[in-house]
Length: 176
Image (cartoon, rainbow, N blue to C red; front, side, top):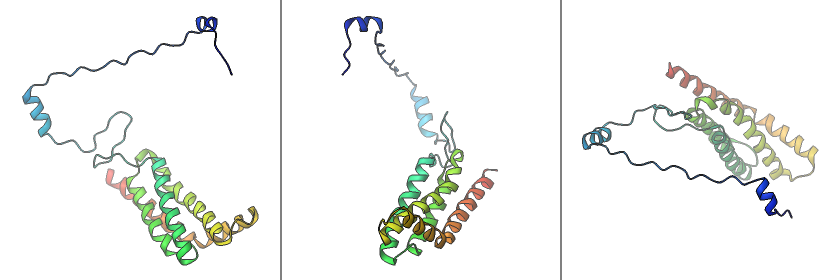
């Protein structure tokens, strides 16, 4: 336990917090207030440090894409593993759809996440599926099971990446 003495406090004074300035309301004429309220918010408006999509909503960030993709993948991967005994259509349909949705909603600065998230999500789902089917029998068995699931789910990954890239291309063409 470290204790400070009065001599320490004098040599190394603690910074004092400064009060944050408060803003005072600026009076606005009734005409200006009515005009401001009557004008619709501009679509596609940007603020410093924030990218807005054309409909005025912020897009998905990289963590948002990762959470959404992994969350949907895990839920439907486990459901598919329990219901059908492996990774099948019950996982594939929502996985491809969420990949397309993420590509449509992602911020332009975070486009890379849309291409990176599906393979990583499938890797996690393959590991969970292997453990659910065979239990954890060691690292070698887990690796073998994951490779087998990834090989059998390759068409699903190709579909998810194909939809994601197609949506990104359409978005890019609509911008110009």
